[in-house]
Image 1 (tube, rainbow, N blue to C red):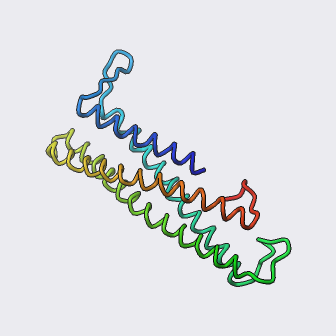
Image 2: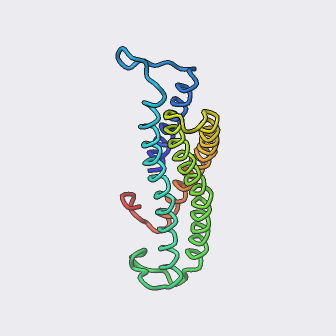
Image 3: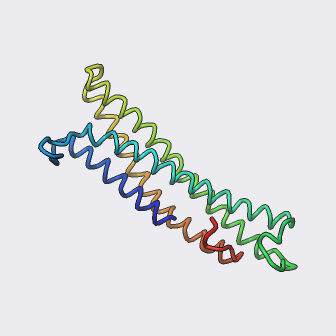
Length: 186
């Protein structure tokens, strides 16, 4: 799943950069006989960004939730049959390892979700200001400034998400290996 999400955010950043390059007239693309404008790419690119970021955000929330649920089961000592066929008498090593997993999953969530929210907010504002600029309500510099902030936030968020998707993937592999959770389950 992490590899799929990495692919989604890679396509997201490429589509937004392509939109910016079209706006700056650095890149010229044809759609049939007419040139493709940045407005024609901005709409699908930003809609795609919203969906890609939703998937990434829910992945980190899901990983944190799974590790917290496993930690709750281990520390409470109830429902151990959900994790073990024959629960061991001493759960201390499991508790210590799972606590580290919980901390790592929470860190991944805290390091990525604020950037997701920031890029979505700046992207929406840039999108709205783009429409306002086309109708003459705001200056081009206002729209361009917010777009620049969006691109910076998206670039920082992209690299954070890329890094923490890798760490979360490894965390899930370790958690599933420790408790024998099937790969088909989160």
